[in-house]
Structures are given as C-alpha cells and as structure tokens.
Length: 231
Length: 73
Image (cartoon, rainbow over the protein chains, first blue to last red):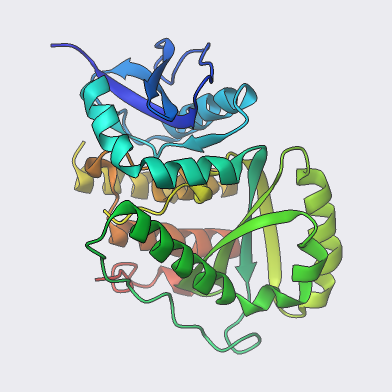
C-alpha cells in the first residue's frame, strides 16, 4: 500500500517546498491546476499533541518563507493520493484562488477581546448556526463573504480603535464567543513585517476601549483567512 | 484517529496548555483549509476550545461549568 499524503498548505503555482515535514518526511509540491499543494508522504494523520501541532505550524511558516501567498491546511488532513487531492481541491478552485489573492504578502494577528457582559455591549448573541446552502462554490463564497461581513460588525467593542488600525488591517474575520470574559476573537490580516507596528498601535489605541481589554498574538500564517468551509 | 479520540486528545492538550498553544489549537484545529472531511473536530469541539481559552487566559473559573452544555447543536 502506498502511503497517503499529508497536506500542509495550498500555495500559488510555482511555489517551492524544500524542507521536511512534521515527521521528517521530505516535502513536495503537487500541482493542482491554478494552484499547488505542499504535501509529505504519511500513512495516517499524526496524533494531536503539542509537539505535532507546533511541528505543523513550523512547516507552514517555513513554506511561507518562500511563498508570497499561502493558505495553511487544517491539522490532520491526509488524502489517499494526488488524484484524491486534486479531486478535493479543484471544485473549490475559485474560492481558493480568491483566498490566495487576499492573503498574498500578508500574515495574521489574533486579537482576543475580553470584557464583562455588563460593562460593554449587551451580551451578544453568538452567530446563529448558519443553514447549509446546497449551492455551488461561487454561491458558497458569496454567502461566506456576507457572513464574514456580518460577523465583523458583531464586535462593536472594537469600534473605538478601528480607525487607528485601519491603515494596517487589510481584512478582518471575527467570531463571537459565549464564554465571558472572552467576548470575541478577531483575526486581522496585515502586511508581512508589520506585526510590531500593529502591536504598538493596538496597545496605544487600547486605552480608548474602557473596560474592554484586548490581547494580540502573532504574526501567524493566515489560518483564519482560508475559505470558510461548509462541510 | 476517530473524531471522538481527536476531541479527547485536544482536551488533554488544553488541560496543560499555555496561551501560545491555545492559539495554535485555535488556528490549526478550527481554521485552515479542510481537504478531507475526517479532520473536522465537530462544533462541540470548537466551543470546547473557546471555553478553555477563555478560562485559561482569564482564570475565570466559572466558565468551566459544564463545557458541553454550551456546545452548539
């Protein structure tokens, strides 16, 4: 039996994959039409451990060094072979292409927004579970964009600092949580190399937030800016 | 690895995780391109991550109360 392929990332065509994967296996590029995937041969998905999670992230970061645009794969994606990989990705070519254009030259900052329900905005309803749309990838993309815009508006706690960050933030994803004091997670797409400026700007602007506290981590590869899945 | 075994493994990590590891869990298990259906943690698992995140980053013990109850249907 031939080994399966562990998928690390989707990249623009022409990307290189020189290093090794999380199990020490050599990486290689599988062309998939308009884009490519970085994979390593592996029989089964590795166990979820701190070590393997860190290793996956390291591999993605190394790939990002030589790729202007990278969409990290979720941890644990193993496909049977190259044919299965192309079959999985090509129906989503349009949304993946759009996402690759979005993340080109960018990385992600993650902002956790904390506060008391009583102090800030009313305890927001979490984003309602969205109905699955039995539609094509184009429609799915539009639906997901719409949903993202709506979600972004659902973090009014950040409104006082949005103008300060607007020069740096190219795109935002947000997710509200039902677990106070964590009110929301906000993911900002910023230009590569701007993380320090972003942190300074955020720290300076955060004084305007009153009782709401924010804490940012990053830079991360743009994990939160991959196409939303409607699996 | 079955979804339930995976969820259990995640729970084990979250028990001992520091902030940076929690961010990793969020990014690697909740985000990223899904190439196969089998890796999905399930929505219950996603909520679990945030319950733990909130609890661990803020030491707000009360959010530990029944993590499953909050899981989305």
